[in-house]
Length: 464
Image (cartoon, rainbow, N blue to C red; front, side, top):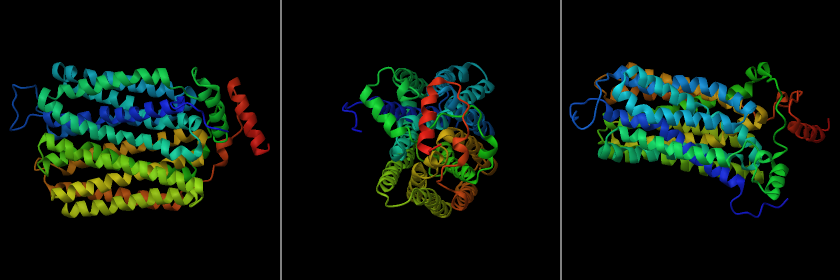
């Protein structure tokens, strides 16, 4: 089957919109982590320039941590909801909610109480919590298995969103004050929602503007990967599957690293290394740029090795999961010893976050390996547990990092992160698999006529 002749196909447009959507995800996610530095009253702040707030350390960490309350609930449900109702509706609605809450943040913070700000941040968490797990049902319908790692590297465009936010928010705050951060990122979110609902559909067959040539090509390449989804999920089999828990635990540990870096890179650079807000944004962005670059490189290598048979899929997943965890452990050990030095800190933060990017070729596509039909549910479970770990990181910081805010207090956090990575590496190494699980193709109860052809094709392929 020849590839479609169009330069910009519906699949290409989908990839671009998804890429920009993940950049937006972390813009809406991290804007508070940057703005809160300027929102709090400090000894050197000028109260006449812009309104600031006398929040203590516990309140500050609650503002950063309450995001996870909504994120946990949404992540747990969104994978299943996307498999039932489609990614287009679920993800799109989530980003609309997060955008509205972001735009309202300056007004609510200035004219209402601290409690209402907490409610808004929970709303942002709910809106953004749907994104990572709901993208998997979309991927299994649009992307061939041999291109899966490259497509999933678009998820790490979120790190570019982090880097961009860290850089331009420093300049926005300096020029216009902290409210501008929420107005600008919210406006970007509103702009993105338009092409998402116009250009993205849940499957090639549903797209009203796709060419016959591209539709035929995608059906030929992708139809062997997924089948019609059973109306009832085999929850008992899913929740007792060791390969599933290997993915979930590994992804949970990855997200602990990601959430911790997002929440506290800027604060660490400010409190321990004493960078000013403009230098802080630029330097803090470097680890996240490196994360995206490592995800692109690792996904390219993974798909190349998969196509050529240079390594088995199992070996690829182990290299980019277990190996990445041990790189994180090494970098965090160095950071816990010499992290008071700004050069050492910047380098180790870059290495630490670069290693998280490699998981895009490891445990994340492993969900598609073991259960294409329920990959969204699996990553939803992992994202939810990872959000709990992210919330726990805020409590670790609140407990051990008091008003002195020195390097010795931060050491406790780094050693906690080392322990998390060791657990992730060990659990995945022992229990991971790349074999499609038997319950993935459980007896189907077809309720929609459009699924019948897929089910018949699957039976013919399996000889049943």
